[in-house]
Image (spheres, rainbow, N blue to C red):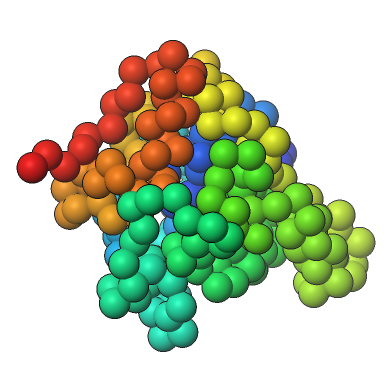
Length: 228
């Protein structure tokens, strides 16, 4: 990659949205550095998916940073004592991980500073999502403002950008865009309780949204589901 190419740090979970977000960043001609977070999630198989996606999309660099969010708990994704819901619930679901995207973007911001980059990409979505507060436009805008005052680069005049290209797209629109960009969704894992082989439960909120998205997009669902 030529050094004159602008660098970007892309948060890559291994799920459908982040894989599409990475493909969009690459389509912009950016020098993409992927960052995945091992935060003690029960669906750790998504980290293997992230490695597959990063390799397939030929990112410049892929790093996995460990942050133990099980130490604070409070989420079905980090506490095995809290069941993952298999039916729609009212309000913010127990799969919400307290401050997760704040922590993730902070790590991406730190990496970006070391890389002399000013662009952060995150696959946050406020249309077909579970109602998480840190997936809204207000959060992304607030974090951009934080980056401006919290970093040496910011106070020295670098204009930070936090891009969330999926924010206002439906899951079907995201899938169609990814297909056009050559994303192989069979490599991704979205399920909140996928098994060690990456097979999805087919019952959690994330599985429901993903399945309905493929149906609405008119694209065959490549998800591998656990069978009885």
